Image 1: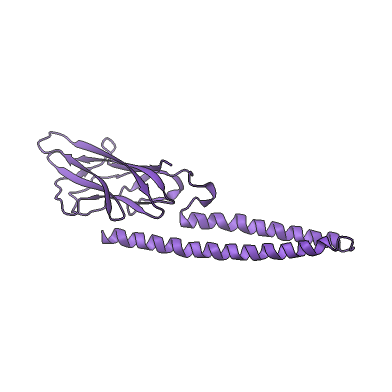
Image 2: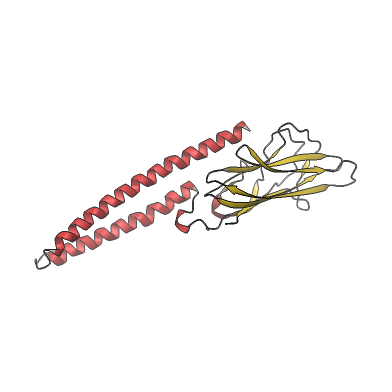
Length: 225
């Protein structure tokens, strides 16, 4: 769990640092716009001057440069932040991931890493840590499916930061083949919250968590509204 918390702290610091850079850039843009406005105001009283057309061309060029700065830099910052600022609160957020191999009997408080992610709109799910980071606040749906090997059992939890949203228990004790369990939760999530699937912090698991082409252990989520 300490690894997850450290990751979350790191992401929050990154977001804060980049937000400060955005504010600094916006301040510079405002200064450029104010200078352009001063030139415009001056030209309004000098429209009969022979140099008017030349000065007007300079003003228009400055306006274009300011717009270019905004269009070029802000999308890059938004991508670094992992945010969809320009699309509003209803921008597309969705991911689907699965484990590409069986997981030997996991220890308690083990974060499952779903290392294949065929669908990950705007890259908010990290296939190396198993963590989804919310790009903005809203109501989200999360669902997961796990397969436990014959004779085994696995106790999983869906967690946001350090709060348990829901849990599932896959029990194949006495079964002749694999069994599966699916959990689904709808939750209000805040921007930068970390959501992941882990084993119970104190529970004991037995046997592999199975994941193959025919029995995939999966984790998915999307923004509802």
